[in-house]
Image 1: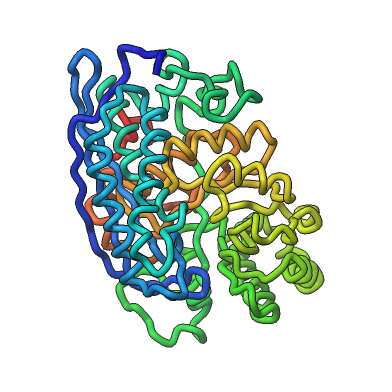
Image 2: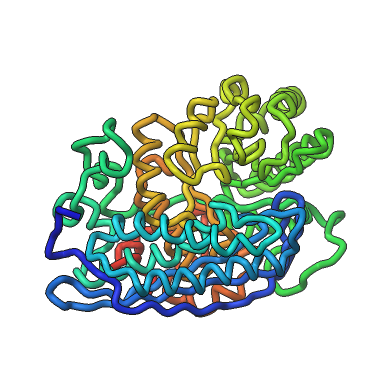
Length: 451
């Protein structure tokens, strides 16, 4: 790189480790029930040009069922492929000797990580998808941004302007963004408070009639109990996408229980999102479901804020899945499909009106996609990956620092609370939800602010 700054950093040391946790209750991704998680933790020591050092930390669940869905490889095999890639990424990062801003380092490392995934895939029954590679690479990228903020004694969200970055957005997003700075699309300070989106999983009991196997750990068991416990005002409803009658009845029942409970609590306004995890075979299914919902429960229809990834993540292989008509009814958000600028632009051309940002795709890429989506006028939301601990802090920080993002997801408190032990007292506003919201004003520490 020809442009440099004294604030630039280089990687001095990389260490990785893993955590394994069991869920208190299973969660369904794309038709597959998951009851456990493997978390990849990354520590990176960096040094400035002047020799000042700091250590950054990144963490992310590998979530192979979501990132590496397969009909020819089982859970253990896809997880093994992703952990093998993590080991290779640690070596690659440790041998990367460029000195630059973390966004530049993140972009360079992503290319090398993708090449490593291709090499590992030679011996697999199915190649490692790009999405899975982004998930594996995300804690490395997070650790770099965390370390960069720490070595300069500031929040990393203060480091995306020309005082720290060597290049403008045109270098990453093309000539349409020439002369623009990333900090124009990022908030320096976090929003003080954000509503929480609670997940209503397809396997979750909605009421006592569905509660056949109580967990019995003291946490809520039914939807009504969760609404009372957290004061919920935002609910994300997981749907099957392959049985219209079931999907419709599920939404109607959620709306009925929510209405009864909110009336009891004196709450008059709340929202839903609908998540199909790309299970709808076509757009016609989605449109018919939305219209039937409007007929059956017009108030419930009005409460739907957006619809998430209804059809296949492979946009190029399914050009018929254009969202223009569906998006006239509700915003339709790209999630699994979003892996780079090319897929964002393709989704926009195909009628998607929103984008789901995720910390598990990398801090660097998430911020660049946030900038691109804002310029395109797209609806923005931030989703998590049942992120616990430091990964939830990262995800919440992303949501709190991107303009236009109105709510936060936090699924680990429902499914994997054991992984949050020790974090509740340090960040009570994030891990102890009251009045349906997170207190995000605390997300202003040095680096990413978690450790």
